[in-house]
Image (cartoon, rainbow, N blue to C red; front, side, top):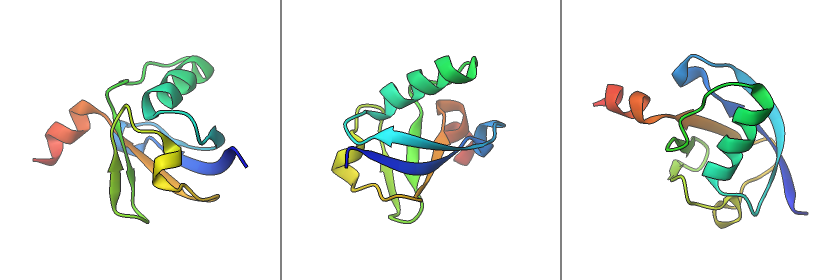
Length: 87
């Protein structure tokens, strides 16, 4: 199957949670571009996605197929601004 159903969490940047289906072939940046268009909002395209279950971080050019994303997985979006606030 080429798509996985996941929850994407924008809470770190003041947004909400969305249950979506993503293509395994997409990059993080492609997903964020698509979400920005669908949600009619501005999203930092240099954001990273953290995978709390796997304790991994996906960079903007990473593809979901390379991280074995599972149905039901939580993806947490951190923008450049959010990452600066962590230090």
